[in-house]
Image 1 (tube, rainbow over the protein chains, first blue to last red):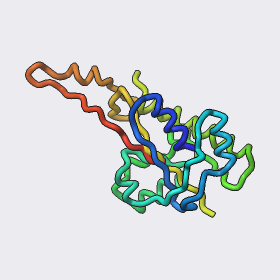
Image 2 (image 1 turned 120 degrees about the horizontal axis):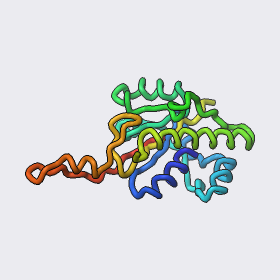
Image 3 (image 1 turned 45 degrees about the horizontal axis):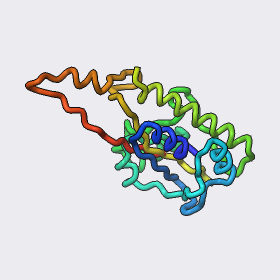
Image 4 (image 1 turned 90 degrees about the horizontal axis):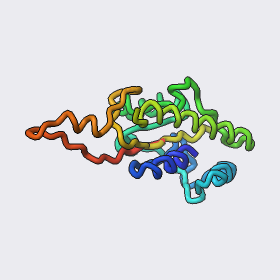
Amino acid sequence: MAEGLLRARFAARGRGTVASAGIAALVGRPADPLAVELLADRGIDLSAHRARQLTPEMIGSADLVLVMETAQQQEIERLSPASRGRVHRLGRFGGFDVEDPFRRPWEAFERALAQIERGLDDFDRAFWSAP
Amino acid sequence: MRRLAPLALALASGCATFAPGMHVSDSQVAERGTPEAPVEILDITPKLLV
């Protein structure tokens, strides 16, 4: 969901690339149908998404890595110590983790989406918005 | 089952960031140059991983 939302934001800006991967990804699997439906309501198509396993090469090629939970940041920095400083929790500014909606009902996906959007808004204000 | 760890690569436009909360626009950076030593603004494409 975060990848889809970021793609939509960057598309409006005309530059930037977005990719996603999982620390323990269900490689090749599509996005959860609830996530697909939720983002379709916002005009974002996740139907072509397929899960990928995170690799040190992906981490090394990224200018910025955004994660949902503190534990993920720690794991990525363990996998790739050189990534320190480029890895941030999406809820860094708000002091929250994005709750994992995996195998949970619609309401959990809605809550996770709201948290992701809040985090992206915070990063927009802190890093990417001109004064 | 561990959750998927979203990583996303993102990027920004129209501003250079020195630190959270500190923004300098491309034009402000360019104004620091002189005819003898112009400042060239490169159009980068940041990569974000979620």
